[in-house]
Length: 253
Image 1 (tube, one colour):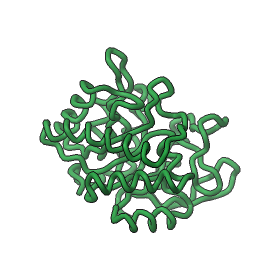
Image 2: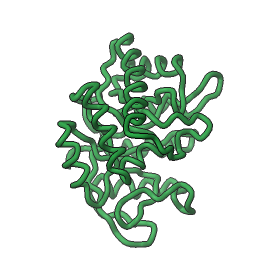
Image 3: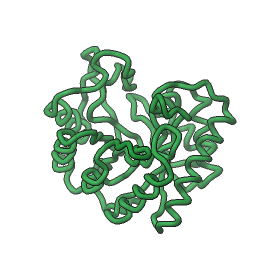
Image 4: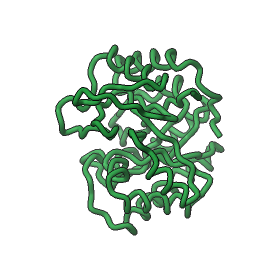
C-alpha cells in the first residue's frame, strides 16, 4: 500500500482566540486543511497558516464549511444546491488568494464538519461540492470519507472529472458501514493514546478496525486525519508519524 498522507485541520483560530497547535502539527503532517472563515478562522489566520505551510513544505488544501461560527460548522444547514456551490466557491476562492500571495499552491479541497458528513449522506450535496470544485479548478482533488464501500463516491467524482483522496480517522468511531459515528453519540471520539495509535496502525496496514457495535470493517484510505488540540494530542500525532514513516515528499502532487 502507498503511504498514508497525514493531514490535520489548521488555521482555526479567530481574532485573539487560539485554536489548535498549528506550529507543532505543521512539522509532522503532509497536508494542511486550512479553515476558510465560515466555520472558523479569519483573513489574518488564513494567510499566516498558508505562510507556515509554505515554510514547512506542507501541501495546502481549502477546508470550507457551513456559515456557522457559533457551532464550529458542526451543525447541518439545509442549504440549496446553489447555496452549497456558492459557499464552497467563496471560501476556496478566498484561500486561493492567500495562496497566490504567498506563492504556495493550493492542491485540494476538504469540506469541514457537517458539510463533510452531509456529502456522504446526501448525494445532491456531494454533487454540488464536486461541481463547485470542477468549476473552480478541475485539477484540485477532493478529500472525502473512506467507508466500507467507496464505489458510489468514486463513480460520481469520476463523472465530474475530479480525483479524490479517501480519508480515514485515527480518533473517531465508525458504524458498521464505515461512516463516522455522530459526535452526539457516546463513544464517537476515541480517548486514550494507545487506542488511537492502534486504529491508525491498522488503517495504515489495510487491516480491519472495530466499529462501534463490535463488527469489523476495512477502510481503504489515502489519507489519515489527526487532531492536535493540546500537547498530549501532539505527542500522539508524533507517534503516528513514526508509525507511518516519512510518508511522501511534502509537496504532494
